[in-house]
Image (cartoon, rainbow, N blue to C red; front, top):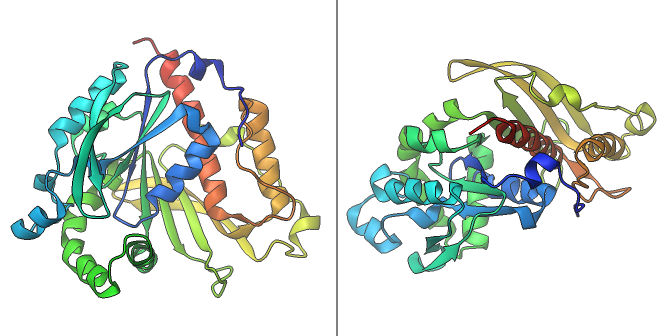
Length: 318
């Protein structure tokens, strides 16, 4: 749940704030996008899945022996044109890719909200796209985690066979390295996801999630992290870990905050209360006794930084 209150800078803005969420297929982009949307308020956030801007349907890609990761298989010209129109406050006719049968449904009207999330393989692919995006995220799970997620999603939700998914992973990997992975260097925030070291045998599995950013001074110093030893020492919420450091990634030094496992409820709630006090937003529905994952807390921190960034962008003339 979220409150009806919202920072004045965001309510008064007429220009949409554009967020780009990049990463491989099955990397967890949608999970973070959904949580961020809940935090900021679904009435204020709309999402465009960049699969809608594929140039070819599934059969055509198979006939051409081309993967959806290849730039020739995507309509970057139309994507850029549509984003520019949305930034002007215009309604567009957005294409719709149907994952069930791999074809295109009829175009549908799409009107901008205060925040527009572009989620997909290539939101940072061209310089033109990068210049139109106000804040960018690259979701970067390690291969073992990414492949397990993709298999679970494509088999369980999209009806593909396990063998077909594994073959697709094998075919797509070279194109991922060539056409998707390089976008990470342009992202404001990189989310690194690994298997948990604090609770490696947990079922369902939990993860170690790191938030990597190039500018550590922006926003995070305004959010206190309160550790209540009376709640932590009994490990009532399960094993967890908190760490930090400097990571060299793509030729850049990034500050890393790592949260591992289920976080103590008191820790998560104090963080939520701090953000509520500063933004008047009731963020994630944390309830007493609920286990809070590292994913939840990292998404909450990103949402807080989105609020800071949007306020800063819309205080700047032009």
